[in-house]
Length: 218
Image (cartoon, rainbow, N blue to C red; front, top):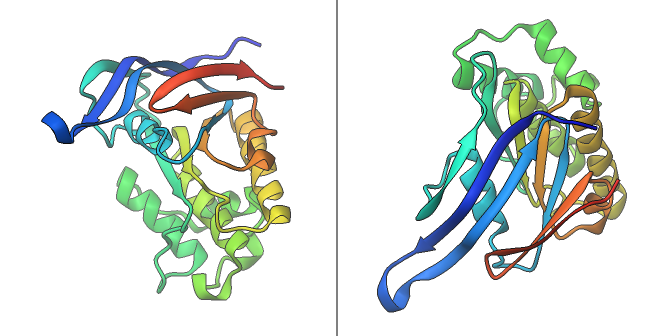
């Protein structure tokens, strides 16, 4: 299947510090990300997975190389999902999603639209609950809804199942796959979790900041 290119990293290196204290987080990495693709980025701790996500999101400048992201005036470039959810504790699930829309797009949140997004990740019935009233898996689904409500070209997730049990990790992996297939979002997930990477269309393997493999899975 041909998929529209969303982002491309070409020869990207990221070095933190200088001189003897310099640490190479990424070393001449070249990688393309496509719409409708679920890409799992795997590798040991310290291999550069988080740095790569930050580079694709435009949150991290590169030392050498370049990153090109498709332009779409009707879409947000990227949205991030984290292991610790990062929901606002005093806002309900619906309010967390609505706030993300208003902050990132300057558009007023429509309650019906927010509810539709929550429904798409399976938690519309929990829209009025606060984060403390939700399980970890439910919080992560709300965090994913907060990401997709801004209509991103890329949904980037950093170890999103790290705090979840295996059954819930499996469900979150299925959700990422469905979002890529149905919404044609480029979903890029940094993970140690085989239940996640086994659901990906493609797996990219990093080691010591270098891309050593990028293979189609399904």
